[in-house]
Amino acid sequence: MAKIEASDSVIFGISIDSMPANAAFAKQIGVTFPLLSDMNRKVLTAYGILQKYPVGGDNYEFARRTTFVIDKNGIIKHIDFDSTAIDPTSAVTICTGLNGNHGK
Image (cartoon, rainbow, N blue to C red):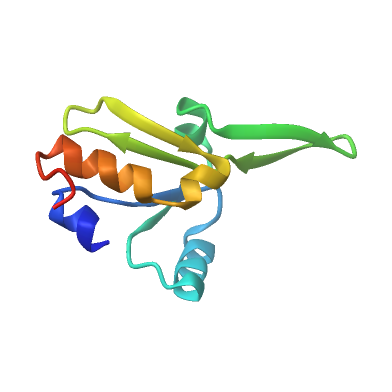
């Protein structure tokens, strides 16, 4: 978090879960950044990370774990998916490079 903050970057999470569920999850894992709720799935759909698959005649939906680095002009500069998205190293490297800090 210190490297992200030093790079003049902001971090937040978005999930399908409700705000109370996100708050409980954040407390459970000790994150200090905001976890936003997208229960209507508009953001997840717009970014192409909402996954659907049939289960017993119903469609089960989940958000694919993804990390986006978006610059100050709103341009996506980097994307990590799935297990790669869990490790923030590449996102931190990109953030520090975008702001001229180059990992300092």
